Image (tube, rainbow, N blue to C red):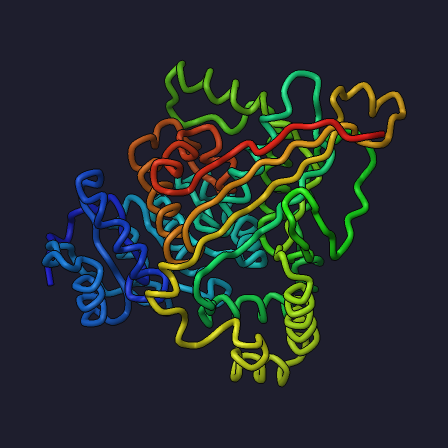
Length: 444
């Protein structure tokens, strides 16, 4: 175990590096040791962290990375940790249970914070309780820097910018398709977060931040719970994920600040780049659907959703769901998580199907039906253990190398912080690609 001087400061500290996702984040971070001046890992069990470092470094010997003791239930240990970190990568979930004290410690220390949560209630609470102090202390807090919700956010921004000139989108619907040569199971933490999200629904609605809504041409779309898209050959069922919420937050921030949020010490070149980027983003109604080529799979997804939605409202129902996740998800989730072979065989495709107007005047003149369609796609490797570490580490690299071009502090979405940077190009260089599939006219 490497030992560091008590006063040394680390470029990044990975908290929870021995967890299901954290160990894959560490493995990805080791690829970029020369890009970060210093890395440390932290958690409750330092011996387990040492074992994880050996696993992540295979087949090479483990590098001399400091291993620090910290516990999310020990505020003093978290503050000491954050005092030694420039950027903290939080991989300790469920975040509704363990995340708040970590954010509080980062904000108090003026340490930048990134995490991989997809828990809406947690993110809303963090924004509500910590934004003002984070701005004051110069701590940049960005949640959902993994598969939740960067492919959706960056994918939406990429799609939106394809509506050039007078063309305007009205509705963009994302269809998430999961592919694998083997049956792959999700880990228990993801399932637990979904179950507990049902419990939090009322609180989320009652305490939701009131936001400015962007002006979108045309009437609000009447989306169906189940839809079929012939052009991509997929059925889709509405997915109550954080993706749509975060895209909405980004568009709301953009409505109030059309040029985006200024960096703390931007170069003139970056100011111009930021303004040019955000001027090309056009708002639209956005939703996400879980997609499959099989209608039978759709009914399976719906049944799982109904079970979680009904049982998740009651304490005994939640106990049943969390006690027997494999039974209630028809084998879709397991306390053991997926094997390395299952992870290697999996991938995702997220299709963005946008309907809108070839000229926004058509909507203003009362032409209610969209006459134009654009289809784009984001695709990449397995979501939770391959894509998520890639995304988180690339966000950390940008935060490390381009800090002066990013907001001084505050609680923001990944889209607002990283949209105008080179994150899309970095993701493409690391296996997550963005494509324009088609642009076509719709019969009216």
